Image (cartoon, rainbow, N blue to C red; front, side, top):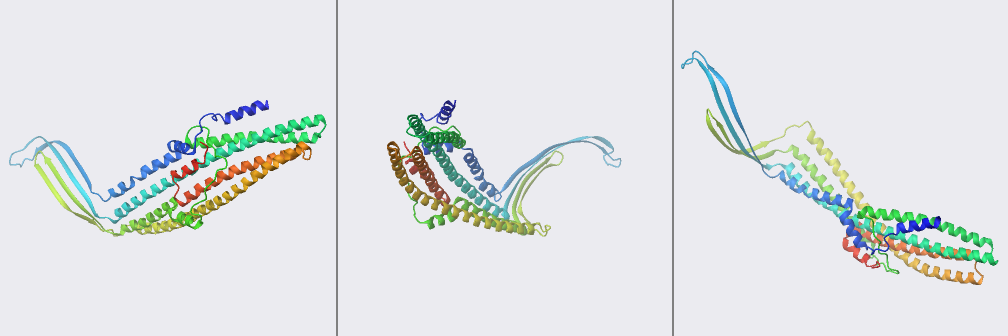
Amino acid sequence: MQKPLIALLISSALLTMNAQAADLIQVYQQALANDATYASARAALAAGQERTTQGRSGLLPVIGLGGSSTKITGDFESKSDNPLGAGSGSRDNSRNQWSLSLSQPLFRWDRWESYQQSKLSQASTEAVFAQAQQDLITRVAQAYFDVLTAQDNLSSIQAQKSATTEQLASAKRNFEVGTQTITDTHEAQAAYDLVVAQEFAAINDLEVKRNALQQIIGTAPASLSTLRPGVTIAAPQPAAIEPWIASAEQQNYSVVGAQLNLEIAKREISRNRAGHLPTLDLVANKGRDSVTASGITKTNAVGVQWNVPLFSGFAVTSKVRESIALEDKARNDLEATRRAAAQNARTAFLGMNSGLAQVRALEAAEVSSKSALDSNKLGYQVGVRINIDVLNAQRQLYSTQRDLSRARYDTIMNGLRLKSAAGTLKEADLAPINELLVK
């Protein structure tokens, strides 16, 4: 029952292997169309782009048209001393009126500052969206290489399982003919049982990683293009760390957003202080009042309207103190964001350089491990090596190959994170990575 179950799990995990493999750029295009997080950021950008228009509206004239139409009915009774004589009756009147009004702010400092804040707020929204674009690139690449890592791990375990199966069969044959002890058979059996357990875990891990990629691209991922054997990963340019850190402290989109938030906080202080300042508006009115009994009255009026605040219960002063404290908070948030961006750039730069060195070391170790395996196989055939020596050499080779693949993926990802921290990561940066994949 065990072997059919393993075969079923493998076929389920690698169901799309016969389909044409999708490369990194194709997967990224799927994410652009289907990722919910990116779609949310795009909608937030569209909403944020309306803020400048809303802020400008406070400086533009407000025009309104209003009116009413009324019918008046009632009874009347004249007094006895009326020269015309006493009497009574009914009288109906109708009244129609309308008024066209205009108000144009001439001096309202709070509205001017609100307009400046709206422009900064729109720019902040654009910075947030630019960061979301970079995050999508890194998220897609990470999920893509996580799947490849899981596939490499499964392939390594399956190769190790195949080799262990051969060694187990060889140990059993040699024991039957008396050239080896039962210990060799038990060691081979233990190695086989261990690799079977590892295979189950690797299959499950691959399925989990594929589901994580599916969450981003919105559909079950097809077979993915893998790295070409022996690829060379380019070192970061420039090769010095200082330009990367300087770029991160100035161009990182999170830093740009924090700088804009600080400027908004400064404008908020000025806007609240405007509560102590007078206001001046140009007002104009044109009206018409028509009453059946008395005729038509037309009015035209143009003037200025001013207001000087005298006392507001210390509300304005309190708001100013609050906005000063919030400005200090925004300044410290900016510094924290700048330090975090610099640290991310430093970590990615060091990780990429150490990754390149690790790749070179593991490439040499792979060659040595292959030689060691061949020597142990030959020694086992002539009787100077035992079964466990061959199993250990095989395990060492497969482990080295798995670590080499992971080191390459991590180095590529650190390169993307470095550009993201520096605020320079773009979709075009995926093209050189895509060229490293098997077409």
